[in-house]
Length: 276
Image 1: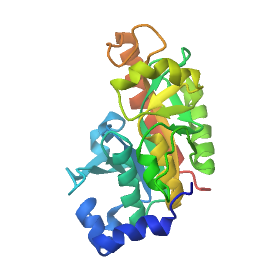
Image 2: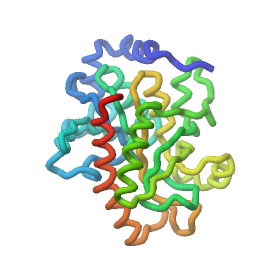
Image 3: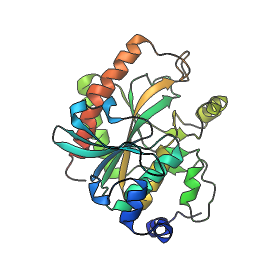
């Protein structure tokens, strides 16, 4: 099993889609030069979850074909594009491939929620994946023979991971926020995953998301630096802490503090790191 080359991945679109600018306009809704070098991509989060309204400018309400949403964020001297791609590995993977076509992207932070399977992961804590595991079907489309990728480890970019780990570690210590290194298993389902949680945990995976493995794999092929900063939304290893239950007021307050005060500082610090 081999992975697709960058050229194969992009030339397939060019063969059927026309020029790069035309493809971008018909999928992202804007021309390539309107994309910033730094990108936050999130399945479901909008930038106002982290950043104040005055820092945010809506660029696209819903892009053609994919219905992505795009914003430009200017916060404390840092400018970047925020893309809300939609839930599931295929949506995030396609957004990254199209962003790769622009030739503009240098650093990407995947920002989202993660469900804990380790009792030590508290609701609202932050987690950085050391690797993510393909439990999705989308990753097979990044192979040259459509081979099954189940269980394959996908890695973030090493330099960006280290920069994120350094920035997050410093800021979390200052703000008394728990930071974990994690190994997410990436699912294609929320509802059906609950019948498999014991097996997934027994395989050695300590948390769950849906998209980070496909994001890491696609970005690696495209030569885009990527790492992930995840906020623990629930913990199915602890009674009453699943997505199907309401979190306590104290947990919600802590989570809001982390997303509003801690995560924005981490994101801007990483984007302003000069040596990567």
